[in-house]
Length: 208
Ligand code: ZN
View (tube, rainbow, N blue to C red):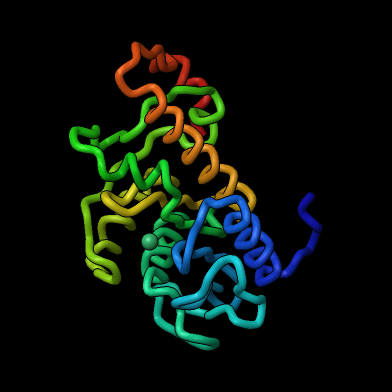
């Protein structure tokens, strides 16, 4: 259960541990941010979500520029770009989760919607999933793509990389990221088999 009035730094650490211990992130990959009154609180560069502590987080401004604390994740600019585009969003989660990352490497994906609506929960929590072009780590030209995409979508998949999901709360962003990863797993399990995804009408009725 989510404690009420939990400080943003404590929320980030709790979600970081949850993602790491369940294998949704590995090594020093993955980053989490929460918008606060002072700026965007984000996990630091080179840290593991399995061990990062609340007093080790970085603060950046809405352009992703470092304000205080340890050096931010090299992907902080991506979080800032998405939060700029979505005033109603307060948190962003990005991982290199195995099945989503695997899908992001496939040839022939629909770049406007990389995964079909296989289940109702996917249709409710993710909806459409734009695929963004490959960028090398730290290439900030990804920010413009992410900002444009985030104006209309809260979830996106980075080619040869992984998912990025924004939410009104950190819990909502994490829920959507988990649903995306599970649907990526189903999609890979079902490759080569005849599949009945939800119809466009069924999916649209559940769209977030
Ligand atoms: Zn990444």
